[in-house]
Image 1: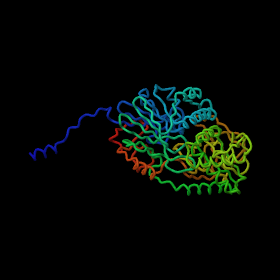
Image 2: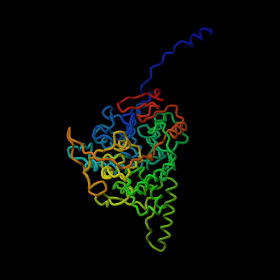
Image 3: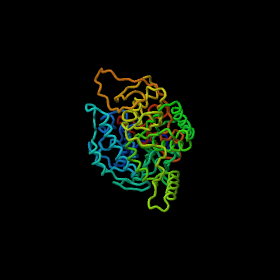
Image 4: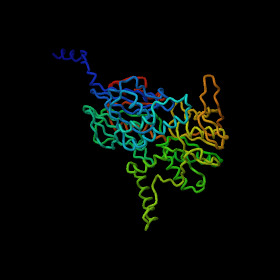
Length: 499
């Protein structure tokens, strides 16, 4: 009998067929093996959740979209937008107007408020900086505004049930309003981080680990792979040394930034440094973004969603304002976003480009707009400097200039020389074989990473703290030490294949 039991134990077991509905499927329509156009699909028990709807900053038109034609969007029950950045939210109007999607869309209140302005601004910039034969608009501003009412805004830590799927957003750090989503389908708990940061900075709450919840599947970003960030204090010191070094030699410092996100953190750093160093207070700091100027009201509105540092500054300045206005009916404007040494630059036509200055200008990838125009204007002068502070996507000018090329291509009309004024605009389309207009690059180029993404150590610690038995990681393609499990060419995976 013992022999029979032993033989029976050694005999191969026949595996029962698995119902496809019992398998968790993860599909990357974009942002799987690249940074840009993030869009992921999770399917389980007949339910489909779509995560983000971005566009790739290095491409134009249809080429910038996730691979929507590889998936039937009519099957999507819920679309969750993690945050307002273009590579995560910019193709949402396209999804809502040009595809057969008819699910429900959710994002947090701050995300929705900023998203409205951000997409409108993007369409206007595209129209302003593209000649008529180059324009490949995927949707109009009117279409974007018409679809805005379809978006449902929700708060952190609130649970919503849609078509038997429960969703709960948690703070993700990264930018104001950014959310991780806990998704429960038929008792299976899935946590999608989106872009997230665990770092304590000047204004954001770091990413939060859901308490009292057993996570079965964790889907996480790892933009920086296993790289480790330099400690924040060291980065800030090095950044200010670089900026003041440019100013001390009589140059202009250009910091290309996303209009909203890390730019606000950098403004807090600069304003604080200027307040402590009177020798630089005569040198202006400009923030060249009409969009950011409009959206600062959102930052002022959602101070309660920020960290204790911002709340403390708000209380202190309000107390100062009340004290100063004692006996008056009016209370002076005061708050953490009322900068003392930063000026809003409404446009380059109003910019007196004389002498040293610091300019934070969008877009962060230097593809067009004010940042690109200032780059082309200032690049030939060796006194000037370009300082990259965010993540640079492959194929963009921000990535190219880090290689310190001798020349860069001019796509804007030239002003009156390397330091002079003159309003730029888009150059005409160059036909096949047409000679490109190149300008010398003599300005210095440096990089200090203030991108609000976890590094390898922070990501590892977060994964271990979550303790999910299954982890899906969307990663940068240039890191051979990590295995990628999502691709932008319609490759799906089952949960038991994920590492």
